[in-house]
Length: 123
Image (cartoon, rainbow, N blue to C red):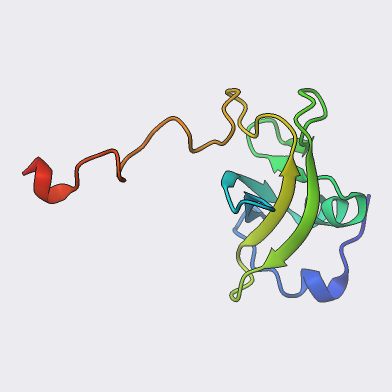
């Protein structure tokens, strides 16, 4: 078990399950890759190893990104937002970030944007 620095742990605002959302972004392009969840242990592992580690809510276990797929996230920077309730992890993504094989978890379902008409055009 890795211990999170108490100064960092004291700033985190966790949900009732003890988790904080982690927005993951490609460090050099700003592309948003995915959203993961971290508890103190996952964040401590991420900070000490330089590889992104998350808590899998579905499997109820730690998930070292790329351990089975080879799609590793090399951590370049970790930030905490102004409220302490969201972590930003800037990474160098190797391969796909999404479990579906897409580059990002936001590639498949455009709800609104340049390629889709706005509310006025839809009536």
